[in-house]
Length: 443
Image (tube, rainbow, N blue to C red; front, side):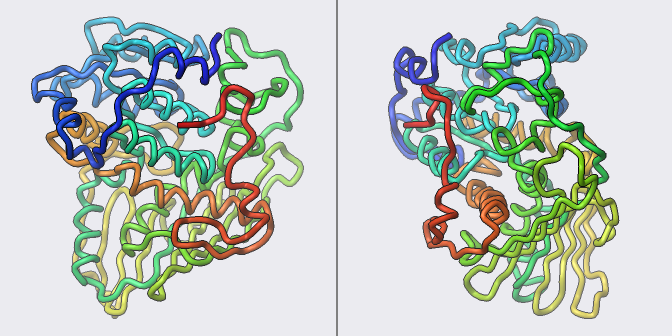
């Protein structure tokens, strides 16, 4: 197996340019855009619970794409995905466990990166360096340095990069945000982003044989090597320390914090405070907070509060997830199923229902919102649409995820500079992470 460094040397780097939001701005980028009738060659990397988000947009005729590869480090995941697609398409995609071999294919146009969190930025940057456009699932990065490098890579390698924050493609959300920006609730000054779930007890980590077929070395990829522990590979990597996951803030809060920031039209916060607890099942294997309250203060007197509870199912806000926006003349409630605008007295001004069947807090993925979001990515590659969630915009929202986790880990609030730098010596020790030698994320 070749390391990431050797892979980049072998495949070479693609030419540089500048194309953001799927809109060409140079002769090189114009020549790269696919024609409206060209069939895109696509790979899905990572075939876990988000697979359902990609079956419809890839298989329906209107997308005009061919699934060239299915890729996963676990054979059972490959077999399950192949079986699912066999009922939707009349050809067989290639099956591969190693992303590096997939990226060697010069006919491949685009990669959907639905791997675990620690693979999001490294795998996406590798794909860009190999000349592929990228749809990267949330959170787009594992740390702030990867956040910065993703944006830099999209510009350097002239790639179309869509973040998997699918509510950016939600019709009722777009309409409600537009109304807020046009003054429907006056001056929008505060947003509360919330998520509530009823996750259960997690087993304690203990040494165990690597599950049959799993390529544990490749699963770890950029992360430092360690021995396998029971149940790590199948979702519980989210809660087993910081090698692979980004806690619930990265797993789900990233969606709601993005909508909140979008509504308030703010960039990086000026100040971050976070208070996290492990409140449920105190003796189990969950190694991070399961209840988080974080506050972000922005310029212009604006504030975002993140209230995330993974294992206490009390619906404080009347729903499992969503965003409440407060303004000088009213308020707004936005979730995946509806958006409601209220006046200052709390009377409904306008209610917008969603036409999407997108999942709320249930495990898994898929629905018409995700389908539209992936199709927007395909059309942006062809130059026919602007990206709804371009990486340079969404990376700022995902910085809030990292600020939350850093504040929790150092048990301290901190200020943030205009460029997103954390103005705290201890916080900046967590700006990046330790990588397995040879897997460092570099441009």
